Image 1 (tube, rainbow, N blue to C red):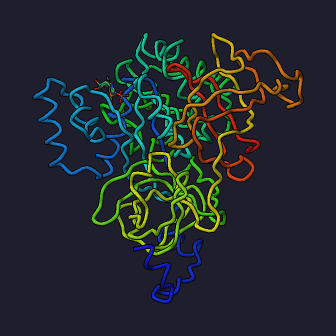
Image 2 (image 1 turned 180 degrees about the horizontal axis):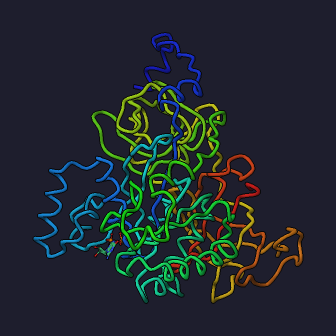
Length: 457
Ligand code: GDP
């Protein structure tokens, strides 16, 4: 127990000195760690594609695949069998949509990939934000069928919103899977046409760099071009490049992790344990060892972390980039929320009710005025906030102030605003932490802006 441990520190084993970078290299067998999210319009085939890919990689046993097939037949949804590899809960099965962010790990030649299957249904955008904010790279799945690409891409479709959100949340690279190519006879014209439209949008509006996006034709249902080179004769006539797994391996790069910064673990789930409780989440910076003292924020409860485990293996330490579970001792479980952050005891994250931020306004219909109520999403946290001051409007390219104290903000503007929270929230400046210093603002079910924290009041 933490309290008795601090009263008699002599009883504590002395802390091991670990060369975190060297140990990580060994643990990962020299491979890079990447966190991948799958995004796209509802029914684009995200779950089927990833489920089939995992099946082909041997991550799903024949037995559980058979079980999935039987169960989906019973419900009259035969083709959903692969999707069910990822959709775990009963509720999701009954509704036929993916709700929570499920996680799976697979390996390629040079990468260890943690896959988060983000939901595509409109009501679940906040979950999508949670999954995507933990991702480094994304696969954007597009339904190539006539009318379907268009409905996902046009106003109200999730293709655009997901792509913009992903970029704003820090996803740097994108593989665009033009899916269901079986249903359009592997047509090169259809493929080229979709790629052309997406390219303009992804580069000009979503803000991806040309070299950070690549495109691939595939079929999640037939399994074409997922883990081995294309074999479909109508496809190989015009497509000669690698399959999706090859692209994941060679195209994606792992970002540089902030291993030397203070420890921060963003909690995405909390469970009851014996005499303690278990948290699941992602380490965004620093590292921690079993037995280390920690501080839970924003509650400011001191405690101890134990039982660390990553990718289902018990480990003696975890570091930035790792998805982990851990047991927390000496902290009141009722003080822990999804969005709470477990921090270095000596150097916890700041907590505040007022911040200054630079925001980019999305395609909104009502202008943002002083006093506007929004929901602030940063990592897993989700807090009501008010835009308490419109400080200035900025020039999009130079960043210079073009107007001070504007009366309102309209679509596509860059601006500086002050935000006020109803209760203290964990805040880090973007200049100190590129991951924790980012946020999204939502209003009445729509994402209205993305921003970075420039000042903590
Ligand atoms: P999600 O909502 O994006 O996860 O989409 P699902 O994976 O649940 O798939 C939605 C529907 O599209 C299901 O009926 C699938 O069987 C079907 N589907 C998925 N991938 C393909 C594909 O490559 N080709 C065809 N023809 N249908 C597909």
